[in-house]
Structure formats: C-alpha cells, structure tokens
Image 1 (cartoon, rainbow, N blue to C red):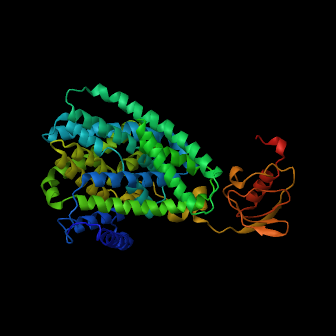
Image 2 (cartoon, rainbow, N blue to C red):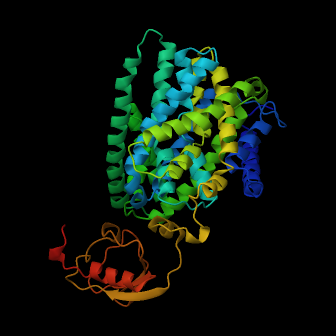
Image 3 (cartoon, one colour):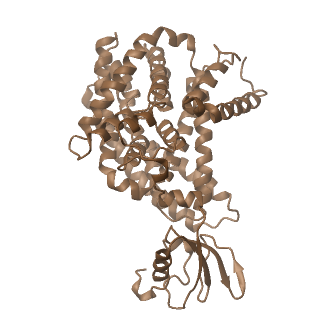
Length: 493
C-alpha cells in the first residue's frame, strides 16, 4: 500500500488511534509504551500486515527533528529549576564528558568486533551515545517512579541536555568518514562552536521569549501556546543558522521559561504536555514504518553483542569516570548507569549516514534500530525493579510534589483568605505576572469597586483591590501578607 494524498490522513489517524489504545494497556504487561508505538509502525510497514511502503529517510529525519523540538522543549518546560540546581554540575558532566566517553568506548569495541573502519566505528558509537529524552521522560513519568537523593532530576537533566553532544559527535565523525583526508583535530572547533553558540542563543532567546510572551497582548488565550511554538522554532532555526546547536538552544530556552512567571503559563504547559506525547507517537510510528524487519534479522547477532556491551560496559564506564570527582553513593552511580535508555533519537541520527550515502549506512541504521529496541525492552521494563534492588526507590506515598507539579496539576487548596491592597503596597499598578507571586498560592478572584474580576497574568492590580487567595498552610498566608504589603520604597524597581 502506498501513502497518497487521499489516504494519508485516514491511515495516519488510524495508526495514531491504535497506538494510543495499545499504549493504554501496555503497562499491564510491563512493556514500555514507546516500544509499542515502534511495533505498531513496523507492523504497518512494508514487511508488516498493512504493507505500507515508506522509504524516505529525508522525510523521517525532518519529522524527527520537528518532533525532537517539541519533546525537548516540553521536557525543558517541565524541568523544575529548584530541583535541578543542586545537581547541575553532575548533569552537565554526564551530558558532555559522559556522552564522549560512551562514544569512544563503544566505538573502540565496534572497531574490534566488526569490519568497520575506526571512523565508521566512532560514528556508530556517537549515534547511540546519548540517553533518549523521549524514552526517559516518558517511562519515568508514566511509571510515577519516586527516587531518592535527586536521582530523578539528574536523569531528566542528562537526557534532556545530552542530545546536542551526540549530534555534534555524529556530524563530526560523519564528516571524517566522508572526508578521509581530514584530521581528528579538525572537529574540535566545530564542537566548541556548536556548544558555545547553542548555550548563548538558548539563554538569549529564553529572555527574549519571556519578554515577548508577557508584553504582547493577544485577544485569545489559545494563541499564547501558538506564540510559544513560533518562538521555539525561531530559537532552533536561528541558532542552527548561525552555526550553533539548535537542540541545546531550545532546551536551555525552555528550562529558563519554565522557571519564569508567564502569562497563561498553565495553558502553555498543559498544551505542550499533550503535544510532546503526540510527537513521541508520530516519531516512533514514522521510524517503525521506515525500518524493514527483514533487514534487521541479519544483524541481530552483532547488534545484540554491541547492545549488551553498551548496557553492561560502555554506559557504566562512562558514568563512573564522569562522576569520579563528585561525592555520590555507589548505588546511585549504578542506577544512573542502568537508566541509559536509547530510543528514537539515535534512530533519527542514524538517518544522517543514510542521506550522506556512505557505504555501511544501511547496516549502521539497522544496528542502531536494534540497539534502541533492546535498550527500551531490557532497561525500560526493569527501571522499577532495579531501583528497588539498589534501594534508591521511595514508596509512592512519600513522593514529593514540586512547585511545578502543584502548579500544573492545579491541586485543591484547603484555605481561602482575602487581602486588601493599600495604596503604598509595592504591587499596586503592577501586573500579576511581573510580581514573582509565590507559586504555592493562587489568586482566584479580585474584588474591585463592588465587582468581581477573574485574574490573569496580564491583570494590573489597583489600590483597594481585594484579592481572594487560596493556599494550604497558615505560613503561606503569612508569607503572602508580607510579600503583598511591602512598601514601594523598599522594593527595587
């Protein structure tokens, strides 16, 4: 069956529906949802039941890049900065040095067990060197796994920020495979250019995006998430245009925005959560359609050998060497080593050799696909078991709720209190979004001149406004009272 303009919507929507239904029941059998999405795509592909012919690495790569934009941006928005800040150094080292060590260790192994050249081996190692954000975010959150000692923020920060490093290494070694006359040292300037420009652009576009979101006045609340999508793609494409790493830029931009007060922030966060799931399904379905199971069979032996080496040797070695200068319990290091999930990102990166037309591109793609499947199947299904075995898991009832979790979930509050604003209070004549209002409390209504106003981020507070505030604890109200009634001359403009 060929995909045509007439049937693509019907086939696409049916596959999407089937994926959602299959995913809903998958965890009853302990199978990660993302693996089911891949299987649905493979069953619908050329070698599968529906026999849909799809053989366009270029289109798959485009879909992959767009999907990764949404997945990384959503992951960045959901990253709680207060949780990430204490483990920032460990996360950055894992996402840079750890990825490099994984690529070099695995590449060396591939060189000795295959007929690949050293650069082709390093290319394969680079493609699968990063943990996959879609897989880690999806599996950790869907399992609601509570972990001790900042483990979860460490894993999510690493998976969200290490794709740029793997991308740079992939492009660098692909260049060396194509241009055999170039030296290894020639890729060093590319690495620093990509990472430095990507970091600067991400922070810069984050500040610019916050200014635009909070200053532009749109007539409809539903347009704000659309505005953020536009800003996300501008951040990625502009950074890529100047030679920086677009993936790093959008992740940093999203982490910055997630820690700021934004107009209609809850609407933006909830929409991105849904879009991230949609993009994960579309991405895995597309990659499932692209692969031919009959071509994977010949590489099962070598693929399993490489995959086991990656899981048992390369990943642990890179983690332990990366974290050797940090004070961390041994069991934490072992668990971080185990959560080295490979998912869709390596498969997307594996399309680059296909498009470049190098000799072993098909074999590299099939091996990478097999590694991703085995990683999600072996590691993804055992995260909870290994966490309990290493004693790094917390009982579900002891799982702490971050401020961001409470904000998104809109949990019910236990108390309501009114505060009247005085003319000398610092928050008078300011918008709610500009006040850095405590996240543990919510303004549900404003009484002004005998009328009730539904507040929004752009609502400007006036003298003698009566704020009706919901909170949980008495100390929250005391803190809020002190915050609201600060005199203007004591607050920096």
